[in-house]
Length: 250
Image (cartoon, rainbow, N blue to C red; front, side, top):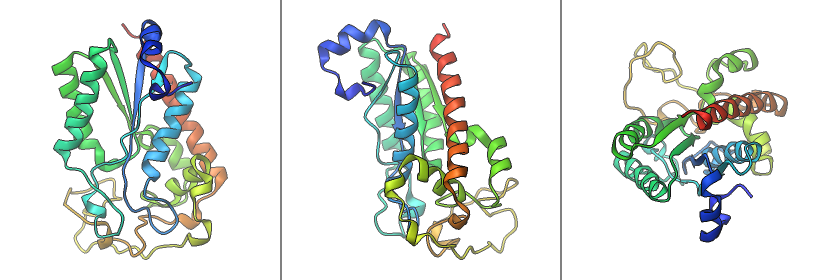
């Protein structure tokens, strides 16, 4: 049993002395091209959280996930639901506040959506300064940049592309619409340094449909289960190593 929400209150009370941290998975409900479900980011965050908690059994529990994120840039595609930054920051802070009241001292956020990072970074500071809790944010795909450089063929691999489709084949194979995988038409911006996939770039506001016809920013036809296994295993190994160290730290 790795889920916080499967415990009864007396079981939580009994286990509290041995619980070293809890994991909060956060994702989004947003378009992921034609072949991946709206909940892709949350499914991926939950799957990784489960595997970490299974490895660190009884020391770490997984909280109910947050299924919504900061997704205004995907709103031109049907199905996307977005929160404001203030809503997500407040929600995460109030979850942490509740945990603190029950004696939990450490919180690990496993985030599946890049658009959440600015808001979650603010939430980390609020939790540390306002509650005195130790808190960490893991963005798994950023944790293995050296691995992605070796495995991926694409220059542009981000949203619903080679990376995310490959890992989805491992994390939620039954939800990938394999027959609907197609290469998108990617539109390069006219102004230099503004493409969101560039390493050296100027930050500008953008909407996904300005770059792609399918909603994918990258080529999912290059995805494979073999690549997904290597990418997921790398994310899992590094996340476990971090969480082990994090919960042992005084």
